Image 1 (cartoon, rainbow, N blue to C red):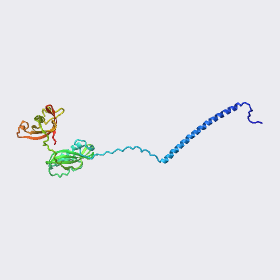
Image 2 (image 1 turned 135 degrees about the horizontal axis):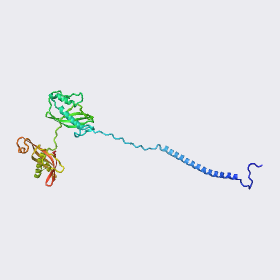
Image 3 (image 1 turned 120 degrees about the horizontal axis):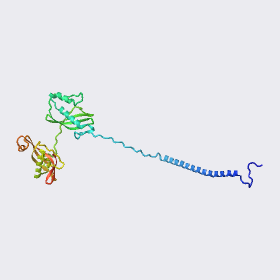
Image 4 (image 1 turned 60 degrees about the horizontal axis):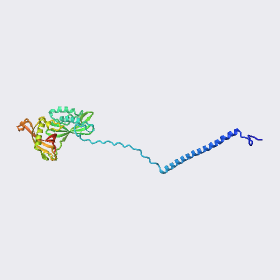
Length: 330
């Protein structure tokens, strides 16, 4: 007795079997392709593992890799302050923002009061000095109230700035016929000033002999025509009349306004090289009650003083133009 489905030999296959066999063959073909894909992915994974392991072994053998140092920003160089030094000229703002010009004028007013002492004016002097001093300071500033000091002149000689608040103003003064210097400490803050300590008496500048005196004879004498031109110029310079005829383009001089009269041109020294240039001209001025023709005639009461000038001339045709005039130096 047969069981199950039996197919007789030679009998055609049923439709159900044909349908079942075809999907099985397709699955076998797709399965074969899937296995190759799995093996390919496994190969890539093993390759990555081997590469990572290889790099790790190299890192262990070579040690830690040297990393480039991060870029460093150079530190700013601190500014260096120049040491305090005297201001080059009164009127400058001074070092560190100190009001040098104002302090110089302030110290000058103070010095004129401080240096002049007399018993009769002691109370007036003390009251005037109080306005320059801090509250509670000695208005006499160390004076014992005796003796007399006469002030002929006082002027600012220099300012030594210490910082934004402190400076020492040096005054050049003539008292009782003697030339002296006076150091005055000044404190400044918020536009206000005060004499911050006792002044100090200092010696006057020492005298020095220059390398060559003003009577140097270096150079060559001027021609008669040049001396005549210079005589006319100095007459115009003394009187301030007709001065423009002697001046070069763009040169402006006001002259002396009749304060003196030209006596004569004493000496003219022209540079040894060149046509003219800067020369030294010595003239005799006449002043006093006998100026003018009376002075020139040498009448009593006429003062005569000789002075030397540095004069720059430029040749212009048969004459000259005056370009500058000033005090002569050796």
